[in-house]
Image (tube, rainbow, N blue to C red; front, side):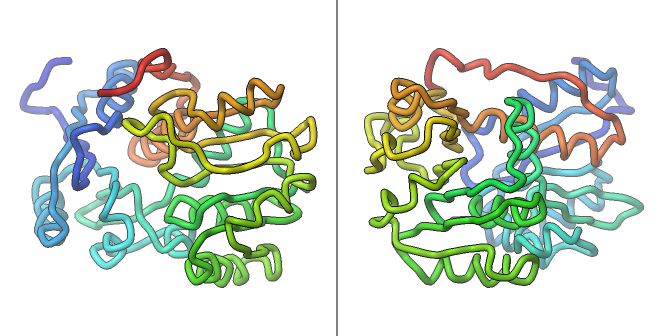
Length: 283
């Protein structure tokens, strides 16, 4: 990579930001497609978010990715937002066009593209979402547009799950069923795709695992964990040993990045970058 007076800037903003893999993905894509862009991580505190976005506008950034804790508060900084970003209540991608900040949400589509790469279709399927954070809301909104038969949303705090259900009800009424996480085993026999969305099992707490009797899943079920560090959590290890197809969070991370790259550049990405940390944890 060489930087000169014509180099355009992309960024990812968050707090913290030290462990992001987005620069690796995007700088690899920029080099692969011959773009004179550079993608940098920026540590932005919540109270500095409006000033940071004004600075990006003034310096004519191409765009930015947005990560924790700014996805929801970013909505107020935008001049326009996509329908999906409005529905999810979060922005993870910003495109700057003619000085306008346009917000998008690519998390849900990133997950769908990762599943498609594995040959998995969700149309007509029963989905179980374990956890009701921001990732679950993005996935639930996208799944509602993909023709799933049912979404079971489990969380310790039912209020959070009910809030997501209310959002999805505007897209597909009565699609989402809410219950407490303690009831997870009661739903497994009718689950086609199990999606774990909490941080349990993430580095450095890699020995942690949710309590779930995976043996109750049907043989064709797919078990997904949005964690990509480690590449195989205890949950995915158990599922693999029981013979289930599994998917970690790298594909979602990669394809939500690809979706953002395509929004910024208009280039259709036809390549897949393997997780460089597939055999070890990110430290």
